[in-house]
Picture (cartoon, rainbow, N blue to C red):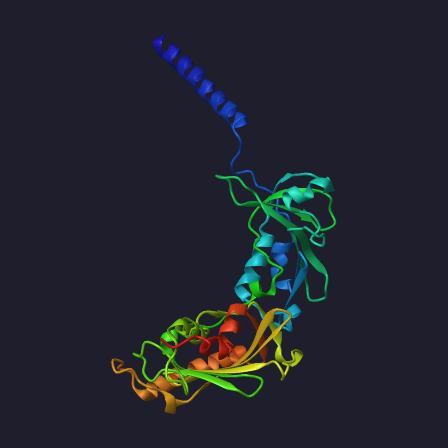
Length: 355
């Protein structure tokens, strides 16, 4: 009898456990629910993407693939950063739908999914094309979801659809061409600078120099001394090639430097590296055409450096080749403060009294 009751009790207990488990599953949300992919066909056609358009407030960037390499078609086919292009396509193919949002245009701006052509828009329209120009995917990228503890998400709206959506995923895009290429041109420390020559459009020149690396301050050629108040300006001139970054780029054959206003500079280092530039300021923007060379005869070996002259020459020549491969044939928009340092007028220095 006891055995029979035990069997019945076990059966009842098992039934209760199973019922409780079923009830628990019905009441709790399913974490493994598979969210639908926003562009389900794109994952199988990633390698077919040959053109990308990013339209943003006041500007559109067009990217183009050619023989396995990507270029910025809207910037005279300057080489684009492949990793960023690739990540953009992958991120777009991975977007997953979470829920529908408003289809009322009056509320688009709150989510950042208004048409990017509107005056105050913050959105970006990203469109992927294949080689024949057919659209593979097109979506307006809005604001990121502001919610802690949840997976990355953002608001989007498919091109041509009224319905806005909340999707899971990341899309970091820009309609500024400078965000699609390697902006750093070169980074040459102030301590390496030996001589800088500024050649003004009127034919006059201005030169500062150091005789040794250890010399603390630069001298002005043909001047007895640098006024103390002007030393900060001299250092600004000499450090202009530190962290030189581009804000934009144009093909040199599509750019014209005015002979009446252009200024040439020559920067020489103690290693014999020479950076020459042609500079101009147009419509409050500064531009530079750069080239690199090496003169071993001007190299000054540091006393504490064990590197021999032949090894140094080889190293500098490799750097020169790398720079010229990148810089040749291109005019870069550079920060205005860099331009102003590199084109300093001699009057800015000589007007200071010598202490």
